[in-house]
Length: 403
Image 1 (cartoon, one colour):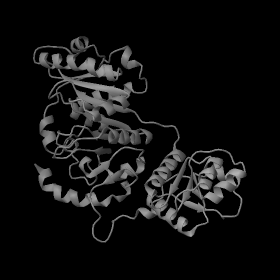
Image 2 (tube, one colour):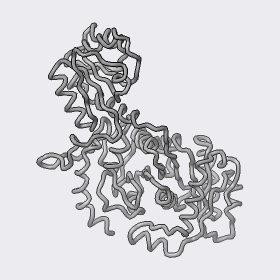
Image 3 (cartoon, helix red, strand yellow):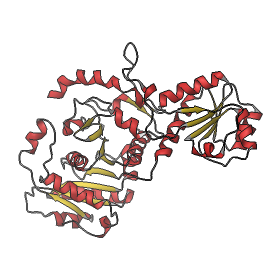
Image 4 (cartoon, one colour):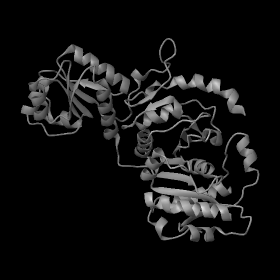
């Protein structure tokens, strides 16, 4: 297949994305000789309020500037002796102080606010902790030893400053039986959504990027990440992942790997906070990673073939999924060799019928030659739109059935 000859070209492009190096999300690949190709020190996070720093130690200022440049936030250094106004204090995305500035700001009775950190180059002493308590600081960090924690704090502050309350929806798609076409339907959902993140959670599926047709698109895949959880910046995640046919995809590869539940939660949460539709393709084996996706899902989509054996298998899985996340629905894919109807399968499984999908001629041939390309009137596209239409009114999943 054509992905075999393309792997070397893809690997060369995977080195282009150092900006994903925010706290717990790190590519295992090393930088090419001469340093990274892109310049993250000049990439300011769009829309972020500047960070206010009041530091007297030049070494501490240099350490902060280096870390802030890596994260992509702008630091405004205030005079060490000048008073900080309430307006400046409240408007900053984060506030970074040394122990002297923290004591002075605490005595000025400035209002309590989040993302206040006290920095020190040495081991914190009693006076440092006392000043941190007085000013209401959430952290006392020693640089450069705790720069990882500072990166996390600055990234969280940047996300909070840009947070407008919008949230994306999360769908978990799983097959009720083998060969149901759940991965294919997950791709169809992602392509139909306005803006989507497709997350491949099947460690032995060979990579969902093949179904999408994006196996040669440069970007990071699961085995190239050392992600242990935490809070991720969506803009950085989006820039590092492959994007093909308007879909950002975090795919597996042609070798098996196990996924960490914390990593899955971090990725899904980043997409949700980025206000995109997150579509998770789950294996039928319920792993910890699958459990994380099911817990986060606004809608669980169980996909089944329309035959007797598939009905039995789907009926066995439906109550297990419903016990984890009751907001679940059924998609039935034709053809039906024995005349079984989609509505009958829904009655047997006890799940509301979200959509039924007619057989689509020449689909297998299309998938072999460039991945899924949805026509607006194709059966998969129509079914995907019906499922996505359920999301704005989540109560309708429990209450009725799609036509």
